[in-house]
Length: 214
Ligand code: OGA
Ligand code: MN
Image (cartoon, rainbow, N blue to C red; front, side, top):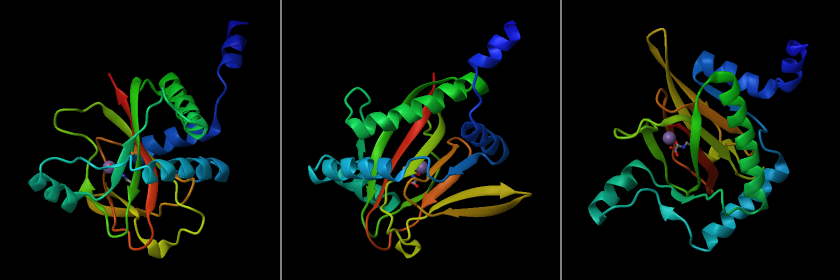
């Protein structure tokens, strides 16, 4: 009887199970249409509205000198999201994230306690050089999450691929992923180095975030 009750309480989610399998196997997972066309459209409209209201900042700005160094590393503009102050599209976004986090915590003992997300816009000509998503003084980032908000006319020639570097049998592989609308990429923040290749045309739009421990 108890067993039956347990089974009823926990409903296995095939999509989340696939993500977990991918992460265990290759430290990253690619999910096409994690978000529907309508959701992507609403989130893109929200991003563009805030961008046009001049709310975005150059990623990690410091002094003029530091700024030049930063520009040679990354050229995106970002706006941190606030889960306590969301519009309808953002609420939907966080509902999906929270559902995934609850599932991961239940099944994987990952212990994700906090999260942080920002919108990002890469103007033409910008990039983010190869890096790891953890900082020397902060190892709480467990999983990195990127979701692409480009429109359905995004072309591969626009560039802006996410390149993931991975070692296999002592040989480095480069996995190249196009920033297609609705696509989500999740990867282990402390393990996989990655890079955003130069955007050659148009603007590259996304939401990037981290699921964190402690
Ligand atoms: C980042 C990052 C990847 C992407 O913001 O740290 O690596 O595809 N983004 O936008
Ligand atoms: Mn990164």
